Length: 178
Ligand SMILES: [Zn+2]
Image (cartoon, helix red, strand yellow):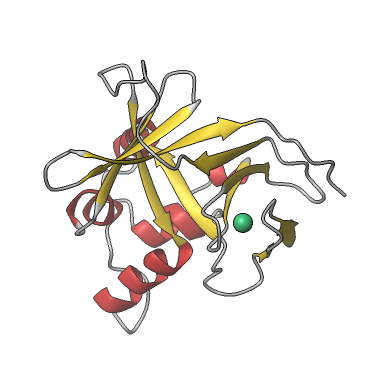
């Protein structure tokens, strides 16, 4: 997919490098399984090189992000795919009854720009030296994300003190797609 019309009216593109509208989302178990398979796994190979490291979710699923309204679209990785889900940022608190606990899984989320910046900052000669483990667990971050077992909610907490920051709710697709 090369572009996607957001509900807010903005058109999202993945043509730039890095793309402003593509984000990368991995579960903690995906990261752990990958590091178990290749302990010295390089960040660049994991995230961007499907030939070197084909076991990753982006071969099946893409995540699109609207910089205007913050919606996140979950889309199959194939031409002219229909959106599976859309996550919308909730305006207020976490809904009553929704609580992050041990049944929730940690998510690792970064924008395409953050991925490129981290790789370039570490070694301007190439992208080869950043380890996946370092990028995922040791880079400074503002938020820590968790997803509910039914994947209906994503909650962001402040990384420093784990207090609630904001939440996303998965909403049904309401618009017919081209
Ligand atoms: Zn939007």
